[in-house]
Image (cartoon, rainbow over all chains, first blue to last red; front, side, top):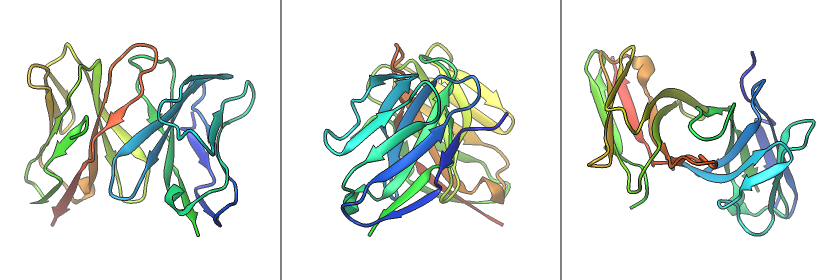
Length: 114
Length: 112
């Protein structure tokens, strides 16, 4: 049973470009969470999705950021018109159920904005 | 200060010694989890303790939870060089959302 998959592992973008980060949850998991980690800091919650639904996006910046988890395929975190401050590690986690379920994390995507 | 603060921020010990890390939080929780992160890597889940539990063991790990003090501790016994990593506590408040709130982490260095 493969773990949470994220790709790409490293992504370099110039200011103003778009970044697309993908996350495939563990088999049987229908809950996906996205977190962002700045250097030397802990992870900060961004968004929680179930299939085709955004449940909680309280941690998402109001502009330029969007997330989806379609019926088929991976969850996508999309950052439009990236700025240098978007440089961070973005982690995806999945769980079988919401609530008290353990969250399993992917290896992360390290985004560098030049 | 934010939910889930770890103490100390950095800890350096020798192999074979025990390492104790503490975590404090502010609001009521449903569960508290501890994760390990090796430099530049993803997070590895270590242990989950529920709000109605006081202590939990897993191998060389021992976690305690004191909800009256809103604090938890992670003890790693007989540390090894491979335990060198950052350790984070994360809390959730339950309900349907269950998003995790992470602390800033303790950086543990185990030397030979």
